[in-house]
Length: 76
Image 1 (cartoon, rainbow, N blue to C red):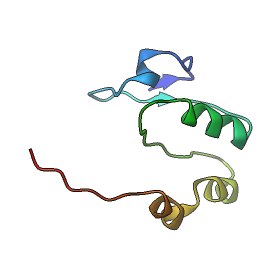
Image 2 (spheres, one colour; image 1 turned 135 degrees about the horizontal axis):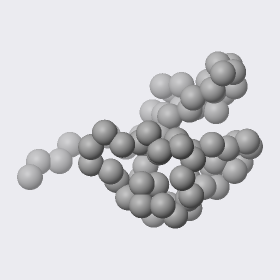
Image 3 (cartoon, rainbow, N blue to C red; image 1 turned 180 degrees about the vertical axis):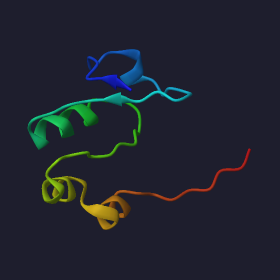
């Protein structure tokens, strides 16, 4: 785990291969949405919080995720 690296750190802007994960902190939901949308990549993420209800509201659960998901199958 890399604790709160800068937004332009390689661990944030590139997909790491291996057991490495950046932990990015934010204080406002609009801030994290802006930061996520600034990426040219489709990134996965999760919300961790001591306030479970707030985390659910931000992440929108499985239904919220499926609303923005286009399922594809690719064969090489």
